[in-house]
Image: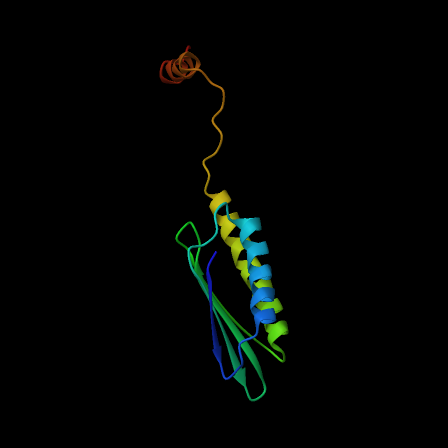
Length: 123
C-alpha cells in the first residue's frame, strides 16, 4: 500500500511515517480484503496544535476523508486512526445490511398449491 506523505511547516520524520503506516495498515487489514490503491496523509503545524488529514478510496469505491486536530502530531494520528476505523465500521455495517433476506425452503409445488387454495377457497 503506497502512502504519500505531505508535511506543511513540519520537518519530515521517518518515525512518524512508520507509525502512521502501521496504524493505517492495521485498519486496512481488518476491514478490507485488498488494500486501497493510494493513500494521502498530510500533516500541518498550526500555532496552537497539529492537524492530520487522510484521504483514500476503499475497494468498494467509497472515498474516505478524515481531518483531526490535536496538540501533538502523534495524538492527531491516533485520533485520525480512530475516526477512520469508525467510518470503515459504519460502511461495512451498511454493506452487510443490504444483503437480501434468506429464502425459505419452499418448493415450487408447495407454493403453487398454496396459491391455488387462496384463489379457489373451499366452501
